[in-house]
Image 1 (cartoon, rainbow, N blue to C red):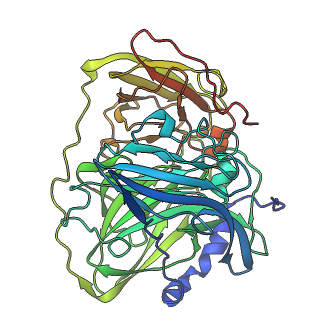
Image 2 (image 1 turned 45 degrees about the horizontal axis):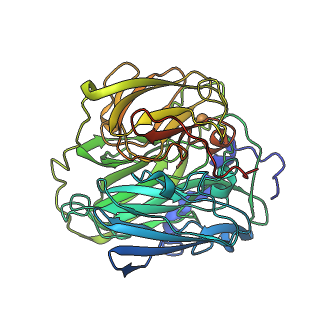
Image 3 (image 1 turned 180 degrees about the vertical axis):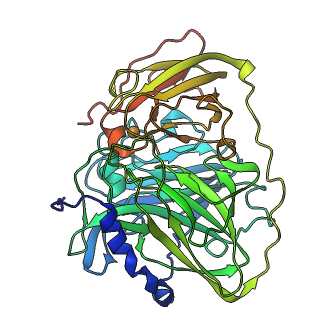
Length: 483
Ligand code: C2O
Ligand code: CU
């Protein structure tokens, strides 16, 4: 992999590269947004079975030429897996990358041996076939590699895809629900390209690699043609390091209807929504016939003014062009769901997680060390605080949690739904409450970590097991041959 000399992302790079977008409207018909295909599945008895092949590919992303890429079932990213609450699924993952990888089902409530963390390695040429029952609210999850130490580059080269959980509420006809038409996936990533159009890895500092070029669904400067009065965008920040602060170029408001783990109680009217790496937001925006507006990322506060974070960068994400006639959409319902809150009175214990620059609670990640032992079928409060000067976020495997408090206050409304990843700016304590109802095995840990992937790779990660009362941590026996 090459390294572009001096290819630091700077506000000027971003500004120069996005300025010609004034002409975006004219390009609309030339570069329509590519929608990831839906993954086909076959029914095998009680199980719906999917196939993913991780392999290298080539794709012309930038005008300069073709780039070498990695993808699932195609040159970049992967198909959208749609599964339904209550069904049993199996996913065959074939690894044709030529080196070991894993695939983690981010946000999924599932047994640890199907989780796809660094202990479920798939050797080059091998196939891994996890299976589980889908048992959690409808939501926009995703999948990506998780080989310890190489997660960042595996994602950066192009591996990642969406995983939707459908249930009656999230697929209701009261919400925009036509895939790719008025229910539109947007996978947002930044990368750096060289003059030949190759994806290049740059140096890391602060948050990690900040790319100079924005891709949406693996595509450079696409445009989306709006065909309905209301459009739902399911936005995934699949960047390795960059956070975004989404809004519309004319300042119009939109409704946030879902966060990481599913629908909010009610649509929340906003002008901006911030997503740190791995977070998702489902937003619904109204357009009038013939209108044009651009989804944009605005400068934001990442709480670390003296660190290169990209917080000041501003750029266009996706120009929207509404057709002259729009399909009528029903008004958004006043209530979307009832988020089942966990009663803090039922918490049996609390634990503290201090996020340092390159470690948690003083210890860098060690694949052989189990950091926390949790009792199955209990509720815990996790006190998380970033005590470094860098921005971090915090992700827990195997479940969705609820934010109980944020900076000593009740959580802001956008954090009142189920979450699996939450922004942790320096010096902001937060309490997360979660229920551990999947027994793992004393030897088979789940992960918790910062989802800025360079941070994760360099040690801001730890491991927990979920065991019977009185059981002790075992010995990690998997994945030890990882370099
Ligand atoms: Cu999306 Cu452990 O990660
Ligand atoms: Cu971090």
